[in-house]
Every structure is written in structure tokens, then in C-alpha cells.
Image (cartoon, rainbow, N blue to C red; front, side, top):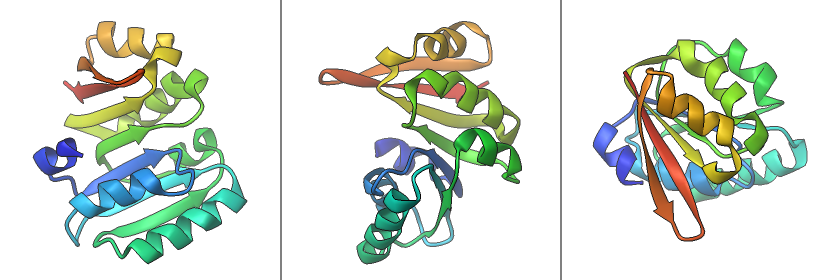
Length: 148
């Protein structure tokens, strides 16, 4: 979560909430006037995430949206300073392309388990839109891409 401390974002988008673990970790690094929006496709799992996030008593406003990120992202308004993608690997590129118009120069996109998303990796490395680097995390890793 060093990236959160370095960027000091005011608006964060997470694609793939699951039980809220990543949202809680990010939220602990955000200040109280930040906003974290997280999207979860499974309503049952989203309820668990909401409860976990509430119990964690993290400072920022956290909004858990239930739905398919492919349908939810286009409806979101405003720009994001950080986007964290950890959902269906085969849709990573589509998630990114849907959120691109909500990024500004310097926005950071972090994608987890990118080894399973080769089209995403090719795009962030060779499109000319991002400065991107891989960070190994054991058997998997993160791709951290800064919007140019």
C-alpha cells in the first residue's frame, strides 16, 4: 500500500471487492476526505464486504457497488487517482479501457495477478499511454501503470 501513501489519492476505484480485504488495506492508508468506490459482482459477497469494511472503521468514505464492472464503470462520474483491478483476469483490458476516460495524467492503475492477463500487459506496455512496471509478489505479481 506504499502506492497509496505516495500518491495521496482523493478518489480510488477498486474493481473486484470480494470480501473487502484490499479495500480495507487501501482505506487504512487514505485520509478521511478520500473516497473509495469498489465494485463486486456477487451480492452475497458484497454484503460480507460491507460488514467487514464497516467493522474495520477505516477513515475514508467507502461505497460498495453491486454489479458487473463492465456495466458499472461507464456510469461512474469523475476522475480517479488510483484504480486497483483484481477481478476476472480475462476482462482486465476491458476494465481498463472503460475507465480510461476517468483517468488523468498521473493516475495510477494497479492490476493484480497480471500473468493471467496477457492482452492487458501488452496494452499497458506498448500503447504509449502508460509508463508501466511489473512488481513481483511471490508466485504472482502486480503491474503498476502510470497514465501519461
